[in-house]
Amino acid sequence: MTDRNPQLILILGGARSGKSTFAEGLAAGRGERITYLATGTACDEEMTERIARHRDGRPSAWRTVECPLNPAAALRAQAKDTDCFLLDCATLLVSNLLLAEDSAGEETVRRALDALLAAYHDAKIDLIIVSNEVGLGLVPEYPLGRLYRDALGRFNQRVAAAADMVYFLVAGLPLEIKSPACRSIEEIEPQRGSAATN
Image 1 (tube, rainbow, N blue to C red):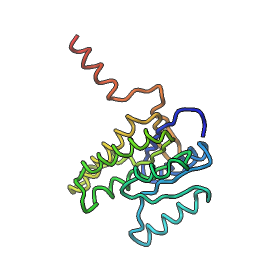
Image 2: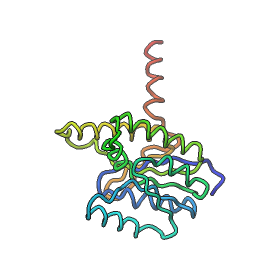
Image 3: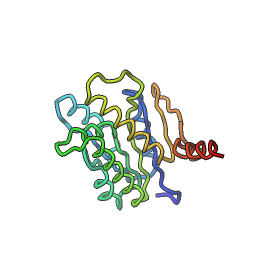
């Protein structure tokens, strides 16, 4: 651990953009005790093989904790033995939450993110979150697809607003789109409103 303040970092991008590789590189530079919060589930043979490839590609010293529905609880449980958390990925987390038997739709996603951000603030340990940007394509033609796109988009917006740094990956190239000097929409909008009334 270093003496600097802990950071929340969001890594966004499309499929096969290099998000996970970039996130793992960032995590590796933030201490020796890395805890990988895995949200994927081995629902079929292809996914089982994909998870195995991801696990084999990570340093053997890293701890992997499977938490498809409750990464906040995993973060709290592992905080004493961790220098940096890497959650990969929010894309599957949101899908898992929406499809859970007791899901209340987007409200379930909102509560899970509230819990995750609270756990991060309490633990005071670096947290890197990987997520897909799904808002650049066509509008899904079925209701569940639209719900998923909207829920993940709002999840990403909230994490980005809370994050110290945000990167967008394109063809393996990281674009820094938020640094500690940047301001979010939430910080700018109230100023616009007050300016309009003065």
